[in-house]
Length: 221
Image (cartoon, rainbow, N blue to C red; front, side):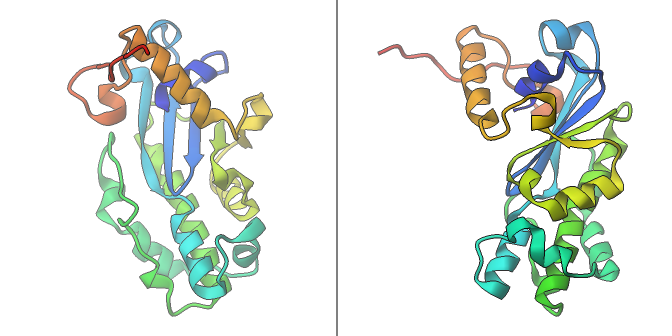
């Protein structure tokens, strides 16, 4: 996704951060240089996982109310953040590691909020998602002028509210004319064309690869 984010975002005033909130949170920081506008290489694209996205909130909604997710953030918006539990989550060593870095679905659990009410647990987990995103900005070469949010998390008012409390100029990708529900499909088509042309899909600053490399092989039917 980072290279597609850069292709979409290079006409905007940079730097920007494109934040995808799916099960996990991940972001792309995009700066300004000839490398970005021409070949999408070099240090002007940085990407890494921020922390949990929806995964813990969804699990908590299922465990406490039998719901697949916290619809419209209602549970979280009705609760109060437990700051001690939030601090416990944020003490995880992942947050002091330098990017590029990535997480697994099971890197965190809902165990620390199990003593809380359904509403307070949802509020705390939502705050964790947003706080993890906010602390990620320390690894940017320069502050992002705006944060563009995609993924299912952009539809959760509680997550968006928590992000806006912590970050400057948070918007959904629709606000800059991108198609939020189609971005992943579009990205894979974009990457397929890059692969066919032998252009890089993976960069040292996005995956930790030792050099920029392409991927896949084309087998015409």
